[in-house]
Image (tube, rainbow, N blue to C red):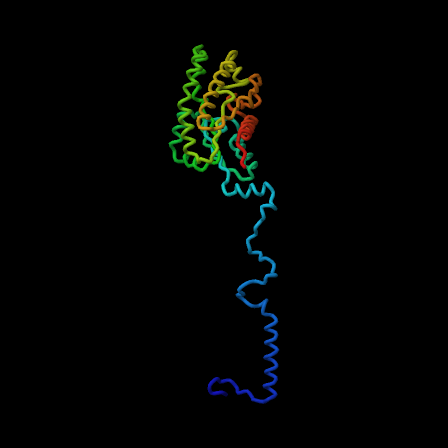
Length: 298
């Protein structure tokens, strides 16, 4: 045994040395031939190697369809639709999807993005009630994140006129005073909505087909004369709503024609059983009117 290593001594014969040299040379040759495939930590891959599956894939814009490019652009900011307003907005009396949801889904499909809906509609809400709603943090947050804001408001402010009509106490002057009385409150609340929403958000304000009951239900409940009177109130109210919308640069979406045509069309097929709110077909008609009025996304 070697005193230093404890290993057996090797016989130093010429034959053994020659054999060992030959083995070493053979091993060196094998190691040199396989170096490209076994070396760990190479500074760079061979230029002829195929791309690694972990490498990011870049798609040339010229090879994508228009829809693909639309998804790429819009995915950075999903479509967020916020609805504000009364029972028409909330979907009262209709066991169906409210128009704001149908509209958002259709608009999202048109823009090739998923849509998120925040429906803040409340039955019985008046213009002053909407103003109070704008004082809440949850409403302001919903507006701050909105891509599109839809507002339907004003009909409940005119409800007291029905009793006056029943009493024969609401002539043309009565109608004029009540509808022009919407002017300042509408201006104020729409201005606040515009200020709370992003500059890039689109605001849409709808009118009404009728601010009271309509169709067969109204005919049965109120008798002759009500239809023409309520029509006059509705048109006057719609004029104020559109004037206020124009003040903030928002499109005023007409719902009178989809339900009434030129004024002679019976809206009953689009109304719920109460005659005061839209049914599923009515909500679809409103959604289509909104979609037609929405500015296309480039």
